[in-house]
Image 1 (cartoon, one colour):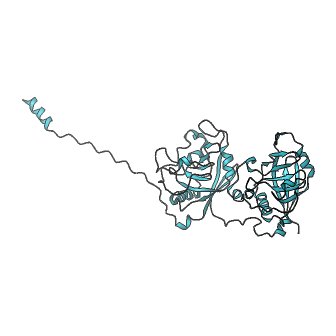
Image 2 (cartoon, helix red, strand yellow):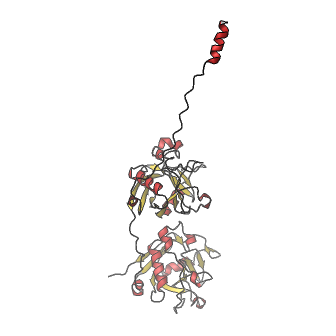
Image 3 (tube, one colour):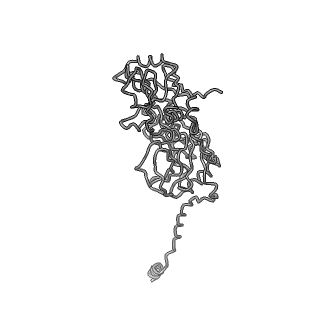
Length: 378
């Protein structure tokens, strides 16, 4: 009987309730408290060993991302970090606070995330776009990490928040992307982001030569510096003002630097200025100066030493490519725009014409180091 009562007592005893598990706290997302004026017309300046990259911050497209980036930059969070992931001619990735410590390389890419919600906009993931890195599978997980696109990535559209665009220094980012890396895109050597600071966007620089008269343009000289010597050209702005203005503008901004004389047609022309021969990509400002021009045909004959602008089937398709005539050719007259003439360095023309060729392509690259613009004297 005693055993039975004990069993009944156990049967009637209420189980001791277990404490309910504590609910997981929702993530705390950053929300900007900066005044709108503190976000507008701002640039981020990233200093690296290879040069400086300047970003236009897109406050209208991603206000919280921009505010967070500004806050972190002002706190020195990016200083001494590294670009810890690179894809050759694709993108570079940085901003992880863990990457300040070289001994923690195995953890690079895991820090500084999970504090920003996704911000949708019409900004495209095209060359020069700067977007926030995410934790895989979590759209609302951005933070301090970012990537800079070297090439268009349409397959990523709608997945990442674009909060900036490269205003200057895209060739620097391109060079960083070409750092030797492992199969998992980890750079073989440390690429340090030395310092990041925020500044007001400066007033746009006026286009060079935009207000010069044809008379003033003609007073300039251009020196085409090549691996085989230099050629000095005079310019005929009285006959082809648009072509001279464009040539001077591209030369002064470095468009021709690192191009080549890619064509040597013996007894006919040597041709350069083709951007496909350039060693590096143009930055945004340089690219803006490469424009198609309407022809400015003039009576100047295509004699030896004449500088004329190349074009495709459409006479209005001339942009940057030019040629220097090697012998009188009436067939070029009134078909191409003459805009200058070589006045020094005719011996260099002879040297270039004499190089071995494969068809019309020089066997050895003929480098155009730069085209230097000489200002007229007082």
